[in-house]
Amino acid sequence: MKVSVDRSLCYGSAECAHRAPDVFAFEDGYGVVRPGREEAADDPRVLEAVEKCPSQAIALR
Picture 1 (tube, rainbow, N blue to C red):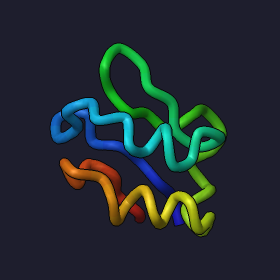
Picture 2 (spheres, rainbow, N blue to C red):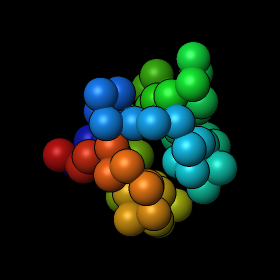
Picture 3 (spheres, rainbow, N blue to C red):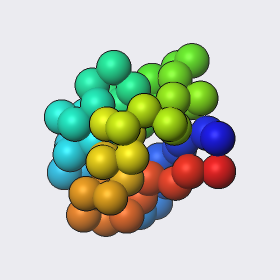
Picture 4 (cartoon, one colour):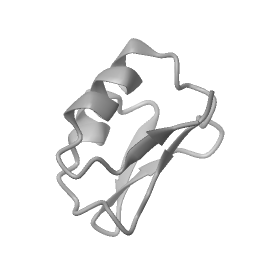
């Protein structure tokens, strides 16, 4: 499973970067998945970030 952030939905709360900083970064006012970390979707902190994202911009595929 892969994790991604839909930039069109993200409004920059940085919740993802605070909850799982080794997977997410905060760049140009938006949350992004760090390069090479797309496969970290089964990490419990990533799952928590998905649940807690206020804009529901994080997707698992």
